[in-house]
Amino acid sequence: MEHGSFTNNSHASFTLAEEDHTLANAVRFMLNQDPRVTLAGYSIPHPSLDRVNIRVQTTGDPAREVLKDACQELMLMNRHVRSVFDKAVAEFKVEEARKKAEEDELQKQRDHLESMDIEGN
Image 1 (spheres, rainbow, N blue to C red):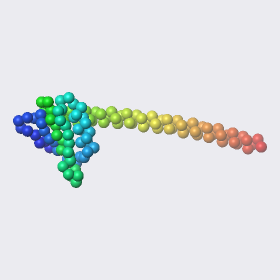
Image 2 (image 1 turned 60 degrees about the vertical axis):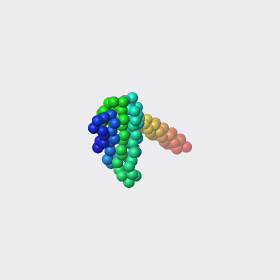
Image 3 (image 1 turned 120 degrees about the vertical axis):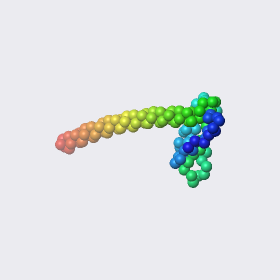
Image 4 (image 1 turned 30 degrees about the horizontal axis):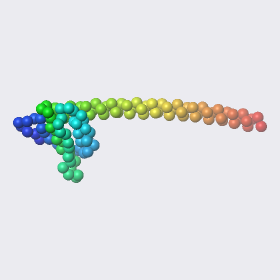
């Protein structure tokens, strides 16, 4: 929900339902990275309410568009983080499988050597 001025669309407040500090702080961060933003902040009206108020003031661009751009940039950043994380997990699993295969091969060799010792005695 948007709460803004009818005369100046460069200043507006937005209410996000069913959200908390997690999303609000990330959106605030992305807004503050935008040179069009002069003020970005958020508040939670009451701890028992699951909603966040985000305030955006810009240099003249519509606050709604600037917020939309910030959310899109945040989604792109999240996709990148997710792809880097997924790649690291896949590499970790491959490395763990390689280590396990090496350990299994070493154990086979030890077992073989032990069986040879038993037969030799």
